[in-house]
Length: 261
Image 1: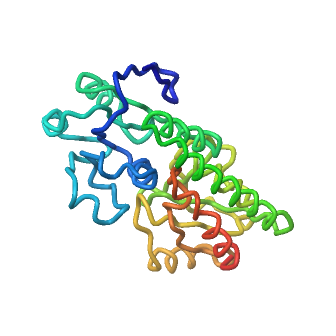
Image 2 (image 1 turned 45 degrees about the vertical axis):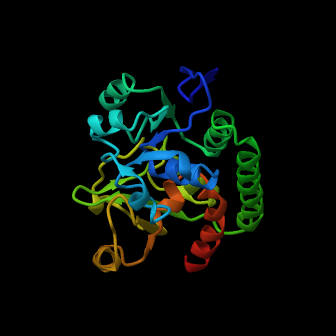
């Protein structure tokens, strides 16, 4: 059987994979919601949903560095990676262990494509179809909710020291757009470092992500001293950057966010 991943690479499999190593947290959660938890033999230390999964399976490392010997010992049928979250060198090494499926996500369409790819890859098309339908329905409902709301100019921070934001060509930017917001850093790409002193009064809100840097209320208070006319709030980074089945609940979260802003 031949399958394409999101880099248009061909993956050849003799049977439906039953031993899965997942090296991307949001994709691990998606596997569980597709009913495939019993087939997951290896995950990363960052695969925190469901919360008890790491106690029931094997932790093989992080998203940037793994223990190859541990993965070899698991005899995986397939290894699931992501172009952004996993390194080229790591993926190259993993290819010698088992077939590697690579995702590449920039927008909702990419996310839906991946979910459907997993449906076919793991023979759970009915479940993947339900998840994608739920996401599309929630997204369409949210679009109606936001169409008459003010278009706020926001900056989304992912890191401190140095200060880094999400700009164009990121899934986070897609979620900012779906919220009806304007990205303050729309003229930059990816995750640039920025000068916090250069922010001006045209900025309506600062969104401090809960991940990968764990922003908290102390950072809100600190920034509030510099940006006295800007709303500053800590947001759940998983709803802005996890592109799997978590999207089913993301738009309800965004409605609450709009109320806070």
